[in-house]
Image (cartoon, rainbow, N blue to C red; front, side, top):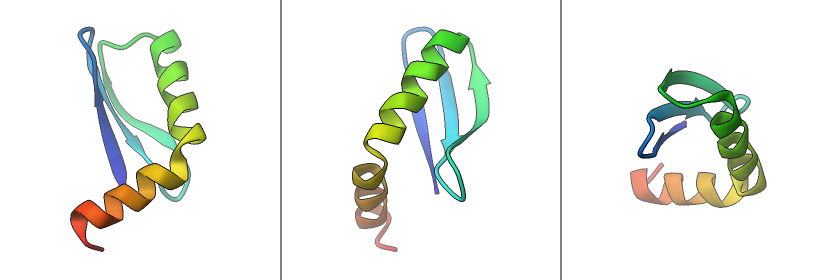
Length: 57
């Protein structure tokens, strides 16, 4: 399970399982990645629920 995050500065792919971790980064700063990870950790349950609903798994 993973998410893609796109901004005007770049994009990243982060794994949600087994732990939240960076898979790929193209152009995002360490500061941006830290902020993105914080949002994902804060909303992890919501993101996973919506991911499962979207992919019907």
